[in-house]
Image (cartoon, rainbow, N blue to C red):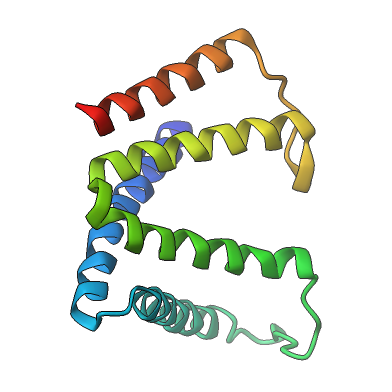
Amino acid sequence: MAGALWSLLGVLAGAFIAIQAPINAQLARGLGVPVAAAAISFLAGAVVLGVVTLLTTRMPGAAIDWRAPAPWLFVTGGVLGAAYVTSTVLLTPRIGAAALMAFLVTGQLLAGMLVDKAGILGVAVREISMGRIVGAVLLLTGALMIRIY
């Protein structure tokens, strides 16, 4: 049961991404500056996450040491997120939301397969099987069909 719930949460998160892209593209049109739209999107998310962090860490004995240096590897997550949001702002009006989501999912799958294969960042090693390769090829084919037709 829990596995199904986590899977549904993943689908919901994917839906949020699909909705976020045209929202940010509309913001970019209104502002006339795509990077500014990405920055505002990140700022809004940062504010919400900051509030949630403050609300969930105000327990006796729990404290965040804001002076502790974050490893650069983990800071790159924000950089990758900024590149992602900026890309969606630029690409949504050019190729459409459906094609963009298809290519994004394809990129996520391919990168995920490489992360699994290498076992980096604490991920359990999972070999790239023929089934995974066929699935990736089918996903890429589907993305191309959505874009072309």
